[in-house]
Length: 400
Image (tube, rainbow, N blue to C red; front, side):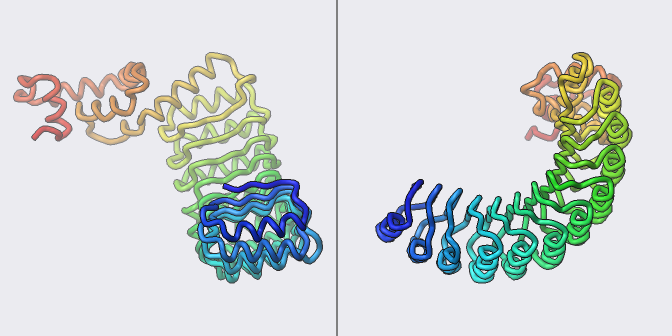
């Protein structure tokens, strides 16, 4: 791992030539450096010949006008890089154009982080065009690039064609409701994207409706980050409704979204019907004791949710303890109680689940005492004569 910072262009040229003979460098990082055209050419030549380098970082650097092209040409010919970080270098549309050209040729990079480069909609178009025929990039991060509706339309077209992307990060841009709707349209029939970050994008009720419409069709998206938007109670209600039928989404954040007790109650009413969601983040909203009590009521009939984040300081200790109790039951495998015709054979499986939380057994027995009674009635006379350990083995099919 090689890291340098605060290097001037002339020194960077010397360094690049010296590193050409290095055969062990796996990660190469430059911070707070000045990149002119000649130093960019030297870096491009270096990245063409390194044999083991899998990660290159260029962060908080001053890239002079016209200097990014040679570096991108070198990366285009590189066959070992898996992760490329070009963060806060103010590359603008010119840099994005060079980036798009590189992506058409390079077939090695899997993770691409391009935050804070002022690409705008025009730069987003160039990058999306480069990704259309790229089959290796799995993660694209374009946070804080001033991307709006036109850039979202470029992504809509990309998502309809690209079958390689797994994670798309577009936080802290300017998508708005129209941009969100365009992205949702592109995702309706996309079967590869697993995670989508739309945090801090001025998305309101209309945008949440477009996302809900997408989730009614899309059965591959597993993570959705809507933090720092303004979906409100109406948006929360729309999302809660679609999650009754969508079983693919596992993780949802609606942190700081102007959601009140009404939005929390909407989620609470739908919780018993949700079969997919594992983690729900609702902190930094206007949810108090009343909204939390509603969520608790819904949680008691939901056996899938394993993490529920609400504002601790707004909750009474009894409510908080009850939420923790039901969440612990779900993490311990409470969903096995849904299976019909359970007998004593279920208990060894349950005990394995709760080995770290022995007191959960008490809550199981308190909730379903008839399960144990039913198990006793089903025991065969021959098994009663066996030692307890062999009885368990026999009922779960472990004995020889």
